[in-house]
Image (cartoon, rainbow, N blue to C red; front, side):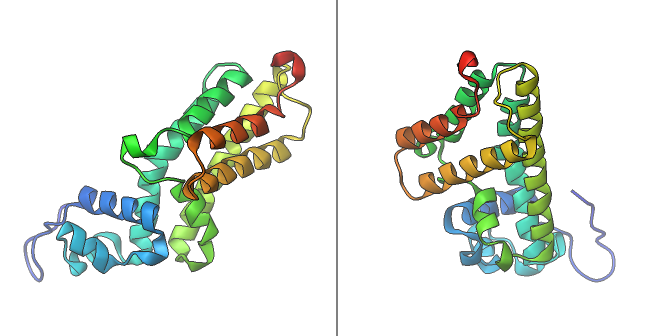
Length: 205
């Protein structure tokens, strides 16, 4: 956290950045970014609006920072699964299990904030859109690298790598939307596993 001088105009910063980010992340994730204002975040955390603006610049800066936090906490673990040294089928099972965890038990919202923001990208500020696009490129890159490694081991069908990455991304997005809509996790898992397994050559299954 940056130090703020107590000399001159203004007061020392007392805003709890982590608390504000946590509240913003959960609010955006559960209610949607367009339904949450800085005033809502301030009311929930006790932070002042001037303090939030000093820390994040504006609403766009807060959304981008919350998205960065979400990526570290929720998206990077999924990428780690695909980067682990394991068979294609093992990676599919592990990723499906991760994406269809019992969210109620974990105390987190249904669906994926990254997917939700992509659906509302035209309503987001330029910094949040730039962050969102960078994270999607990172996710697609991870999917592509996984497909390439799996093809090298003879486990993945001979599908163009860029197409495979987009296909996996589409299945992830569809699964998260189904979960958000209240489709039972077991059903989401079955659909997702069936879709991803079409990439596996029969002899590797």
